[in-house]
Length: 216
Image (cartoon, one colour):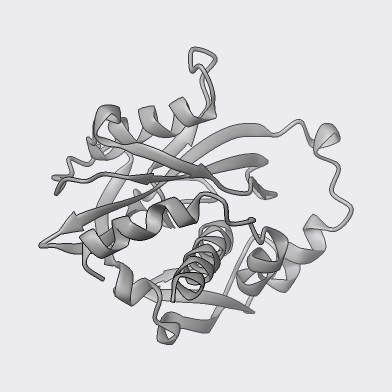
């Protein structure tokens, strides 16, 4: 989709009611659904993080940026994610966390991003994080400068590919819940995207499709 066409939909994105769980479950491993049943976040005392779902133009076409995390000794090693990270007490709010972490991880300054909408928070049981996703837009072409300590690569995903149902697959993976589990995932530029990132992407896809369908 041309970026200028995409911008015309932005005002219609804001009032869309978030589908939340109904979107998340489409891409949730069965074991994850079991872990989230009767969840009491107060007893979990989760750590807080925020991420940025950032759209921007590249050669006139709308793109979404994702990152490949570095390999490390942790549950999210080498996974596909959004730019973002842990909330710091010096952050004014979770939106500032998402903007600050995006700057730190991929080099996009906060003043280049207009935050459009907050999405449904996502609890991640293996790491005990509660992640707050934000939808942001940059109106200019971006150059990314990944922090080599945290980011192995940057994925620039065309919106047209993101909305194509052919990227939705099922794969067998060994997860923190089970070995050789069949899980829903996205095949994005030969990267398998599953778990929390896939669930957040699912809500983003649903909101975009609702907006586009209502505009027709």
